[in-house]
Image (cartoon, rainbow, N blue to C red; front, side, top):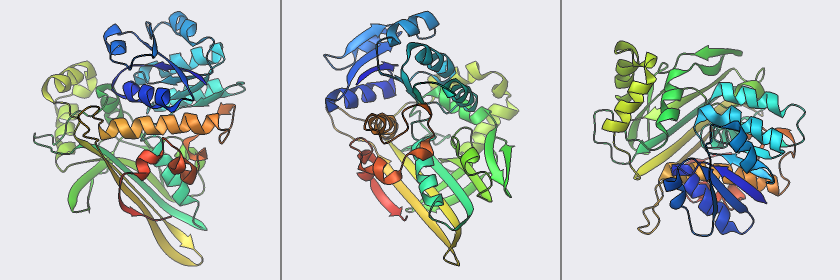
Length: 363
């Protein structure tokens, strides 16, 4: 399969390596940064392209079977529009709710497939949640908790940059979809604070935008409570509320992003936590199923990988691979919950989650 990857950044580097090494994909990587492209493995075709320019995007997409969009979320709709024009199947990592809705409209009646939100959250966590939800005769509650965390937090925020600052601020700023008492509604970000312990570690979780993907629509009328929260170490949420609300930096996101990039170190030593619970009636008994897993960074000296790189790249590569094998619809809009969890975990790329540390996995 001939694939164009848009974006040669932190995640794009790993996607390129996985697909190119598999032997089943011919990969061309496009980015506006020649420096980023120079860090790709030898033998991978590259194109320097202004990824915010529709005409240049269309030019690089033509003649390919599929496009993987690993660009910042605000370019998702533009990339998807050009993919439809070029006749390419489209896959991306966006967590942005508005972009996903626009892509769904683009997919209506399209001869090609459009599958956004193929990362960790949204992405893998939605596949897990839907798998658990299907095991009940009557579904009551589904709670999805995901964290990309530093393994060794030392600063007051108890956080290091492990992925896109743009994506981080986006999920902290926008309304959060949820279902309460069977009704769809929007919750405020950074609210709904809760605390829990898992595997001997204390965490907090709070509302953030985008992690549910399309599950609110899929489970509408079938579930009493559905929500998604980001997991952090205790104290992080209060400091972010100080920055966003009391210092009013939610109205000046560019300044906030510059502050974080300047003052909060990035790390490759991280851990990804996935914690999903579902409860309801099964055979006349009220039961709860839990899926909990930690994925740790690969400390290989030659080619170290962070946990967020591993999980995000595995998500979108597995989605593309299952599509190529005909295990997903071949046209129109594809939801993450249309992926069967056993097939995902059996996939050569999805196995990254199987090789993780199992805390507990039921269902």
